[in-house]
Length: 153
Image (cartoon, rainbow, N blue to C red):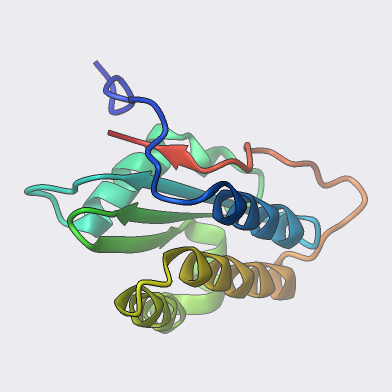
């Protein structure tokens, strides 16, 4: 039984317009870079550090298999109010821990104001800008991973 065995139907965390805005932010960011951004949302992250859970999900989604090791996962446990951002080796070596910590702080600020979708779109855009700086789009780039939000348990 894998980590995705417990998937249920999509939660109504976002309105259709908010969902579309998040997916569009991923697509817009990825059009400018060879990097990949995924958003994984579930209800709870009980008894697990959110960074550890993000790592588990990252590898479960096979995000480490991108050619340049430049995938980024935004992990959110909505009911537990926990989140983490995990960047693969290629992008982490370029931006460092301070970048990720700053992005998490900004998102927590948006979440504190109940602006969940807005905070997610903002961090996706920021991550996309970092990916463009270090992994700009080239003619042979392809979309290696789906752009839609992944909903967990």
